[in-house]
Image 1: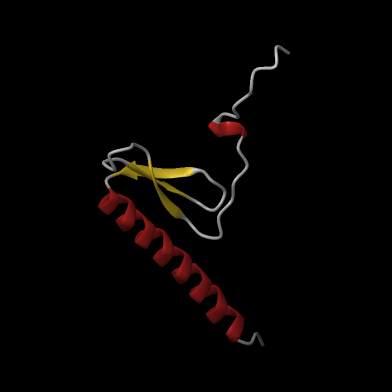
Image 2 (image 1 turned 90 degrees about the vertical axis):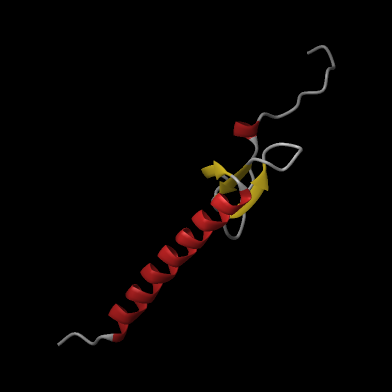
Length: 77
């Protein structure tokens, strides 16, 4: 190797979040990305678009968890 610094590309970066996050994609703040907990891009668009997608994702997760907890409350015969 010639001693040049190697910058890891986006695919080699290992970064995880505790919940989905909205990140800017450009310097002037016109384009954003919504990333899930594993760092996968779920969607891109304006900040408002990403916020709507984030609400949809959070509501879907809440609904699934709520449904699962209600099923566990029901006793089988």
